[in-house]
Image (cartoon, rainbow, N blue to C red; front, side, top):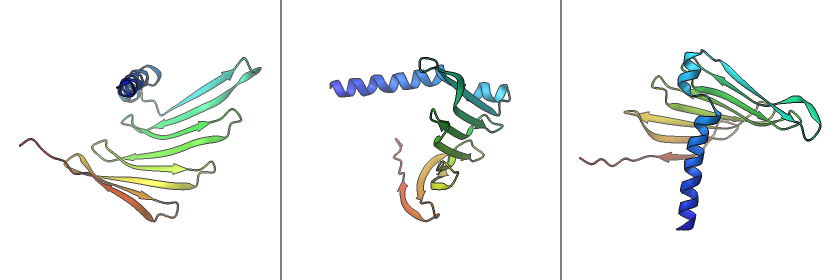
Length: 139
């Protein structure tokens, strides 16, 4: 029971902090923002110059299309690209290494605005796993 409460509280915190720390899709679209760069200052460590912590890029709809996160040395520790369909649903996630080479790709298929399948591809573009989503209705 305690574990369930802790998980529930963590989910609530993550949901709330997402709206506090990042800009909403609506604001990004309204302001026509194409990218956001976050600079981090390590004052206590004597680093007076800023270090780029992350760079996020957006499409015209305000959807996140690319994110790069960096360590203190400026090295890429996370690099992902995203693609969306006309309904704004995420259809492709590409995970890259520090040099921009594809490590893996995940593709989602939708029917009637519901995800029905997710496919996983390796760095060579070979399908290695897939998930199917089945829905039950109240009717």
